[in-house]
View (cartoon, rainbow, N blue to C red):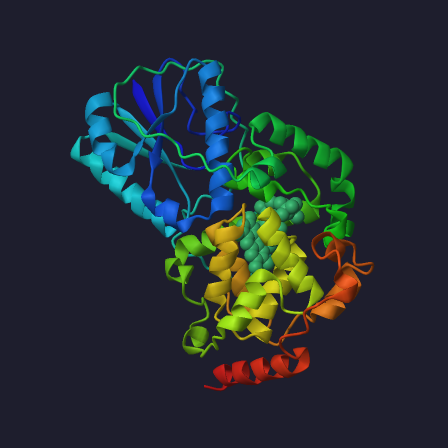
Length: 419
Ligand SMILES: Cc1cc2nc3c(=O)[nH]c(=O)nc-3n(C[C@H](O)[C@H](O)[C@H](O)COP(=O)(O)OP(=O)(O)OC[C@H]3O[C@@H](n4cnc5c(N)ncnc54)[C@H](O)[C@@H]3O)c2cc1C
C-alpha cells in the first residue's frame, strides 16, 4: 500500500492521523502550495508557518522520510507519477479548505484512488445540522466527551523517492516574529508541560489580566499544528481551561455549518446595518492612535508581536464596532492579516460575538468601556507601559467621545430589532 498524506496545518509527529496506520505501508508526506493562502495570510503567520515547515522537514529526515512540496495545481500530475493507493487529507471548516478538498477529491476520483478525509480537531462535524443555540449548551453536551486515545509518534517511515518538479518553500525573514515564538514540536510540548505545572492551577484567577501573561499562548501552536487540541484537552482537567479550548471547537463547527458567515453576520437582522466608514479613524485604530490607552496598547501589541491578549482583543474589537461604528469585517481582516494565531473560525466567531450578531453573542448594548476595563484589568498600567512607555504624557487625544458614540450605536442597533 502506498499512502499520500497531505499536510496543511499539522506539522507534528505526536497525535497525527496523517501517520496513523503507516506501519508496513509506504507514506508520501505532501505539502500543497496554495497561492490563495499567500494572499489571504499575513506576513506574521506566514513567517512562523514556513519556519515550522522547515523544522518539520528536519524531523521527517530523522525518520528517513521527506516532505514533498508541490503547487496545488500540479497535484494531478503528482498522482500520475507517484501512483498512490490512498490519499489522506485533513479537513476543517474553512471554505477554502473545503474547496481545495473538493479539487483533491475530483483528481482522485478521476484516477480511481481512494480518498480518506480525517478530522484532527475534537468533534467531527457529522451531525445533520448545527442546532445549538448557545456555547453553554454546546459545552454541556460535549464536556465529558471521550476525544479518543492519543496516536503515538511514528518510529520509522518508508518514503519512496519520487522525481518531481518541486517548489521551494518561501522564506520570510520576519525575525522579530520568528524569535518570539517556538518553532518545534519538542519546544511546544515542553512549553505546555511548564504551563501546566506553573500556571494552570491559577488560570481562571489570572487569565484575564493582560500584564500577568498567564495564558498558554497555545493558540499559536494549534495554528501551526505543533500540538493537537486532543493532546491538550486529554491532558488537562482544569474546567476553565477546557472550556476555552471548547470555544474554539464551537466556532469551528459553527462555521462549518454556516459557511456564509465567512463574511455575513449570523443574525440575519444585522445584514443590512449601515456601517460608517472614516478612513482617518480606521487608521488610528489600526495604528494604535485612538487616544484610549488600552485599545492603543492592544493594537500596538498586534503590530509588534502578532498577538493580543484575549481581553484586550475584546476591548479593541468592541471599540471598532461600537464606538467607531466601522464595519466589523474590516477589523476582522486586520486582525486576521496580523495575528500569528489567525484562525478563520475563531476570529470570525469572536468578532461576531463581540458585535452582538453571532450565534453566541454579547448583547449589542454591552459596550466595553476602555477606561473601566483598564482600571480593572491593568490597574497599574503595566500592560500599557510595555507598548506605550510614555503613556503618562500621551500625545493622542480620544478620537471619539466614549459615551456619545456608545449611545449612537445603541440607538442605531435598537432599530434593527424594531423592524
Ligand atoms: C476579536 C477576537 C478575535 C480573535 N481571533 C482569534 C484568532 O484569530 N485565532 C485564535 O486562535 N483565537 C482568536 N481569538 C480567541 C482568543 O483571543 C485566543 O484564542 C487567545 O487569546 C489565545 O491565547 P492563549 O492561547 O494564550 O489562550 P488561553 O487562554 O491559554 O486559552 C487556551 C486555548 O483556548 C482557546 N480559546 C481561548 N479563548 C478563546 C476564544 N475566545 N475563542 C476561541 N478559542 C479560544 C484557544 O485555542 C487557546 O489557545 C479571538 C478573540 C477575539 C475577542
